[in-house]
Image (tube, helix red, strand yellow):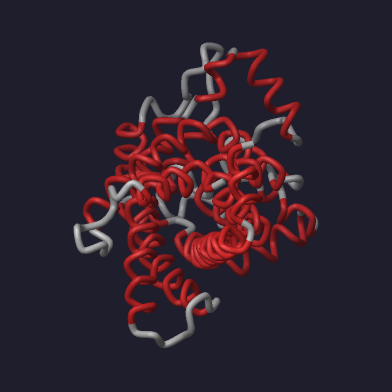
Length: 313
């Protein structure tokens, strides 16, 4: 049930934040491995990027990759939030006095993030490639992949590279998820604990998780920006006949090349879009998660027999 609640919360957030994910990916791929001034700037900022994509590719393009994106949110965040909650229920994230231990919480969240990253990697691969593809070639950035829908994309990857092809780029996403999970969930839990202790809002109020998620979103946007950019580049790069990346051999190689060609600022391309996406996404997913958990807890108290039946079968 915890996996289901986490998945539902993430899907709800993903629907609203997906346009910003499309914008973020386009900005991250702009000027790939090129020094500033040596490439055309199609996307000046997050607002200009959204306008350009809508004008050139059509408004529907702002929801590109929505199907794999929502499945990814369901699988990855359902696993991540669900496993974290199970760890919390087992007492792995708290001190003897019952309060959240930041270090232990971060370790449990990181472990949950690793498992979730491996499970959700095929969906993230297809999502990234669909969202990077421009309908209008005049605003195309990065490697342009031919597939336009999720299932044909999976079919093409399987025919060319077999089952292992679905997990290409996984090593690039794990650091991103470890950092995001280690910062996001513990920060949210600790802040939520603090807000509730002050009794500013009544128990079960939407404002408790709202305030906590605003702070968590701020921290995670700063922490994961470079890892998020490298993950996008790693997943979207073209590959040879053997499935080997044409631009980056591994995550370390990716980081070194970005630093040499684009400088330190290169790691923060699309940071504004990342911030605008992560803020609302963190807010919505964690608020939905907390509210669903609270509602289910209330349901358990009112209907204990039915809750036990739904949980076990």
